[in-house]
Every structure is written in structure tokens, then in C-alpha cells.
Length: 419
Image (cartoon, rainbow, N blue to C red):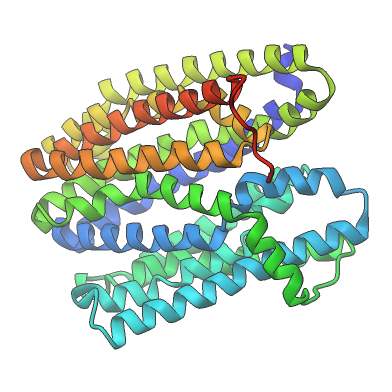
């Protein structure tokens, strides 16, 4: 029981409650959106969301991996805390502006994304939300419950806006915009509240400080790109081989699988700070702590996989507003993606706690290259089902790649990072 009362447990509970709200809203909103837009348009909306999510992760610039840990170490020093928060936020905002300009040029000058240009441009609200999203701050300050509260308000605003505004397929362009704009509004308020409560002043860092942040997090940035190619890139590949109709059926199952896929990520976020402190103070305690968390993550995600695989027909009926046989078949396979992802919880925590940046980049890019190859082959020959199996195998390869990098790091002839 004492294990359940520790800091990581409180973090996980808050993150789980946060995700519970997302699932509840998805169960309410997704059937309405799916029925209103139809399978074809719903697939296009999901494709645009996947594209913009790939861009939005560039905005994050890997600070979700090391930002909370850095902030936890300086949170008692106001000057260092203020400098760190401002530098990270301004770095992310700069990246969001550059990506927005890139998308505008791509659409207006080169005519890319022609069929979904309006949807994609309005979806850029998600980019700017990522720039102000205060998760790394609240994690570092042990105020994760604020994220849960903010998420409840965000989803209420988003749900109400969808039901009041979305009435026909012609209004599909507003779906992703409302998602991003509601989050931007609430996260902007949360950021203001953090500055007020923590007595932080909004300051523009020097160019040297910004460039230093860009250089410092470049390895994490590369790793983040690869990680999100592995997670979100599949639907972009699939769109080249199947009809919008099948893309919509896949999107329905993917919505559920993507929410479940976040569970292993929450576990890492919950234990990373405590694991880092233990690694510095007591190696034996660190290994014991990590093993317990790892076992718990495997048990939890295995039962999630069993439950959602067996209940796939009912889940799809609830989420889609109707039973779609192919979507249920896809979900049966994709329900085990969280378990396959949880295999890597121990490896990724070790790499982040010990600042193994180079190994992280190598492992994530090996995984991304495998995912692209497997998704191309699977999508070409077997369509959406081929992609589902490719994504499941990708998580296994991800586990093998990270484990191999850690074993190489223990080799006496291996040269550790100097970064």
C-alpha cells in the first residue's frame, strides 16, 4: 500500500484521470462527429490531425523528455526557474511560428495538401496550443492535478462547440480547429496562473540563451521526431493505398488505440523524476523501484489489451454510433499496442534518467525506419489491417532497439555521451 501512496502513484492517478476525461469525451463526441461527417470525411479529418500532430511534436522540441526533470532540480531557485521556463516557452513558440509559415508556403505557394488545405490550416491552432502547453512546468513543480482540471474544462468547451457548430460534412474544417482552439484558450489561462502563483515574470530571453536551448535539446528533438513518425506516420502512409472509406474505418479504431497507447507514456512520466533522484542517491533502491513500476505497467497494459480486444465490437458500437465489423477487427489487434509499448518502459526510463541522448536517438530512428518499411509493405498488400500489425510489430522492435542500445552502453569499450 505504501507503494501506491508514493509521488509517482499520485502522478499516475492524475494522468489517468486526465485520460479518463479524454476517453469519456471521445465516447460522447466521436459518434456524433462520425455520424455527421460520414466515414469518408472522418478519415480525411483524422489524416489532417495526424499530419498536424507530426508538426506539433516539433514544437515540443523534446522538452517533454527533460524539461520536468530540469525544472524539478531548480524549482527552489526563482531566478533559475524563471529563466528555464521562459527559455523553453520562447523556444517552442519560435518553432511554432516557423512551422506555421512553412505550412502557409506549402499550401499557398506549392499547392500541397490541396484537398484538405482549409482543414489543415485551421488545424494549426493545435501548433500554437503545443507552444503554450504547460505540462512540463506542472510536472516539474509537482502540480500535475492542474492539467487534469484544465483538461476537464477544455473538453467541456470542445464538446459543446462541436455539438453547437458541427451540423453537416461541409463544416468538417472546424473539427480540428475547435479541438486546438479550446485547448489553447485553457492552457493559455493555466500558463498565466502558473506565472502568477510562482511569481514568475514573462521575459524574452537573449538570442544566445535561445540558441543554447536549441543546441541542448537537439538530440531529444531528433528522438521525438522519430517517435512520432512511429506513432502518427502510419495513417499518412495508409492514405496512399486505401480509399477514404477504409481510412475512416481505420481512424475509428485508431482513436481508441491511440488513447490506450498513452498509458505506458503516463507511467514513464509518473516515475521519471523519482527514478532520476534515486539513480543519483541509491542505485539499489533505483533498480528495485524501476522493477516494481515495470511489472505493474506490464500487468496493467496486458489486461487492458485483453479487455479491449474482447470488447472491441461493443467499444466500436459506442465510439462510432454503429457497429462496424472491420473497425472492430482492427481494434482487436491494436488493443495490444499498449502492452507491446509497455515492454519498453524500463529501457526508456533508464535512458532518460541517465541522459543517454545518443542512444535514445539511435533507438528511436531504428524504430521509425522499421515502422515506415513495415507500414509501406503492410498497407500496400493488406491495407488497414496490414498497418495495424505493422504498428504492433513496431512496438516490439522499439523494445529491442532500446534494449540493444543500453547493452552497448554497458560494454567496456563503449564511449559514453559527452553531451
